[in-house]
Image 1 (spheres, rainbow, N blue to C red):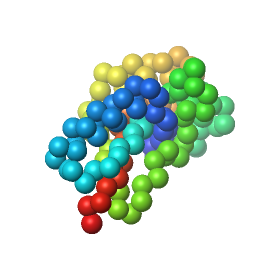
Image 2: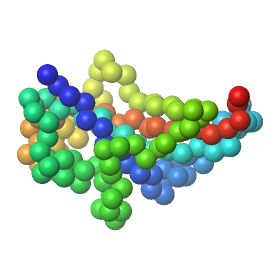
Image 3: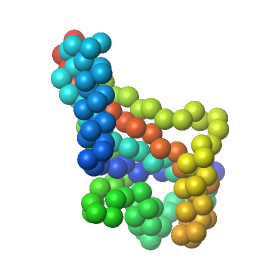
Image 4: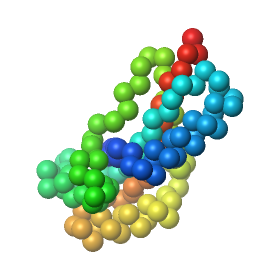
Length: 132
């Protein structure tokens, strides 16, 4: 049975710029919007019978992270929305594999991670505001 593992990437400079762009676009439609926080999530389809070992998790964390930013990848989300916040997750459809997934799976196999058969990236954003 396959398990989907999640690796959350703390936003770097380009992600902060993207969340600022998102906030500016949404504020035209949602004037109550006060802020937007962004992260990427790598959704890894793990096909082995057991969960990945510590060494395998270390390899996956290294593959998804930025070599200049240590500690930017975690298995728990960096976003902590309040009950009034809006959480959006945008990514590819689940019924087909993207070309980017095919490339990432090839890299995982080259790194000895044979249990990875699909990796899809989603962007997660929380919006804070006074909508209630």
